[in-house]
Amino acid sequence: QLTAVLEQADTHAADTNKIWISRFSAQQLLDMATQLEQRLADTDLNSLPLYGIPFAVKDNIDLLGLPTTAGCADFAYQPTESAMVVQRLIDAGAIPIGKTNLDQFATGLNGTRSPYGIARNSVNPAYIAGGSSSGSALAVALGQVSFSLGTDTAGSGRVPAAFNGLVGLKPSCGLLSTRGVVPACRSLDCVSIFSLDSADAATVLAVAAGYDAADPYSRDRAPAALQTVQRIGIPAADQLQFFGDAEYAACFDKQCERLLSQGYQLVEIDFSPFLAAAKLLYSGAWVAERYHALQPLLQRSPESVLPVIRQIVEPAAHLSAVQTFDGFYQLAAYKRQADQVLSTIDLIMTPTAGRIFRVDEMLADPIALNNQLGYYTNFMNLLDYAALAIPSGTRADGLPFGVTVFADAGHDHNLLAFAQRLEAKAESKTKSKTGMTQ
Image 1 (cartoon, helix red, strand yellow):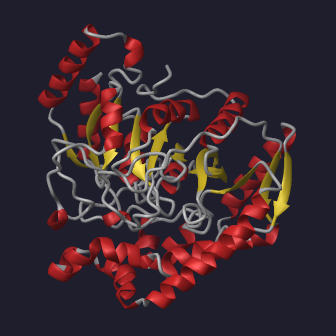
Image 2 (tube, helix red, strand yellow):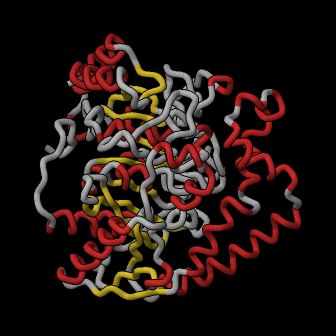
């Protein structure tokens, strides 16, 4: 199986789709497999729930043996240990193949902002893969690994899932340790999971989740009780945005019709507090967190950071403490309003993204179009919700469309259970050879 994984990775490494930044050699992977076999001889398979399953790691997450670049060669360093979440997966028997491409410093939702090359859509390379966890999504979508880790601060684990027909779990903040993750916005960052279906995501989550006393942002979150989903909130019609993509609008309508036919109630909600909170992420105090993470490099070697990234983060150097507290106060008000909306239904469903763009469109207008990609995603961690992106059909040209369901923090398993019920009702489809649940 590892030989097949490497052959797949080498095939795609030769084309224009830049998925990997670094990978272990064939010999290193065979050595890992041999060591894993020796571990199995001393234990039982139940203690290795991910035995022999290949996975990928976004290159802003430490993996011992390979450099961490965060998409910037001048920033790169050799970690002395793997990130806690990676180590938990390895301890459960999973085999890391390598480090994947990303929008530099996880700042972007499109996959074009990398000096290591543009990550292109798995279905049509003229279109974006989504970001910032572009390579991690592509590695799963193209059958190179069974699952992968990304990060998600503004939608980086959901948008690439939607654009490549994957499940993308954005866990409750603090549920997965971020120790060993290069910060984007440290107080908001989450490690995310890409998989072929929600059952695989649940399997990985069960291993990856866990309180980490050495991570100040780790939280010992007790999972919410499983509940029956009946009332699903959707944004009011005049608050839905598809940015001119009529086919994505039709895909969302079809998803709503499917849910109605299955007996769910769809309730239009006031989406305005969620949208207001979303605007804070890149137009207020939280940009200063991104500046804080990059400040040493910007002061030492500003040319090492892509111009589009500098354009986003450098203005935050002039934010005042008063402006920062203004942002905190605004967010608290939006959080109260959003929570009140959420309390009236079981979960909320939105498009994951309102539109998918061609690569040339994104390069021509990188900031405005990227902002459109975050319309349904940027508020999620600010408001402390759990979210799950799930595939929901395709456009006429075959490009995937996806929706995101979200609920209060702690409801990760409820979201996954809901998605599994939808998958069970959907037409059976063939999974790739690397699927975990074959």
